[in-house]
Length: 170
Image (cartoon, rainbow, N blue to C red; front, side, top):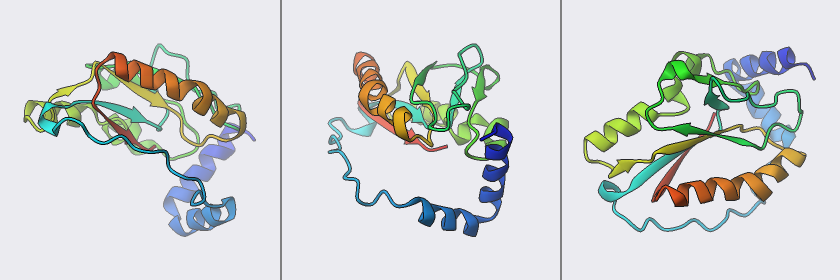
């Protein structure tokens, strides 16, 4: 399907909530997919190092954009360093209306809010690296995420001493 059609649909669905609910029912439910076991928080928040993962298609301007030509999506990820400014970020994702996020990337990658929490002592530290990926995955792209990218992301966060990951949808 052409990219303009995907962008058009995302604008319609975001403005006509009842259409997106109808589409969601038609697409099926994920209720029958068991959640993986979640790790307990081992450190109090004021001592925890926190990282962000966004499924909003966020990446650095000099990184390759996510593959929008593949109807299954793109199961890869992009590393986003701490301290990056909004002017250095881009959003490549056709499956949601990201007009608000284009104006303020904190909508889908709340780096500024995380820094504020660290300064206020609500969290211990902000991780040195965060991750941008694309939501709306199926087929082979979902396999890439599950079989390769998820493990690489976990290893990256382990290397950075991350205690807690905040997952942000697109």
